[in-house]
Image (cartoon, rainbow, N blue to C red; front, side, top):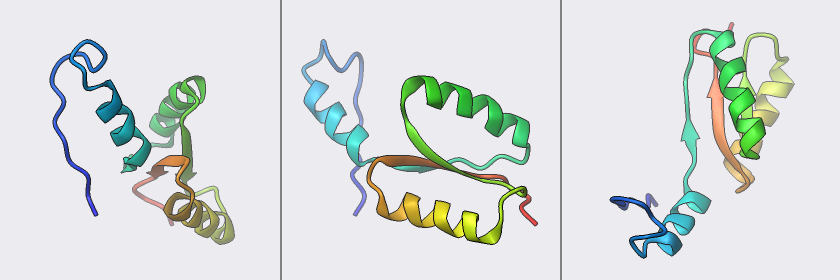
Length: 88
């Protein structure tokens, strides 16, 4: 089930803080990149923000890739999956 809601303006000043908080707890994203260097840059920002994510790239074993996908699908704390577009 998709939860779609458009929030305009600052969530805290518009009274939508609770709605924004609910959406951010439920939302997950898959962000594709062709370059591992881009994944490295985004990873720095996510780590500093405390956002849980899983990464998929060509350096990972098949078992590690499977584990990352399973955690993204089953762990509500994992919000973002970063697959490298050209995994061998």
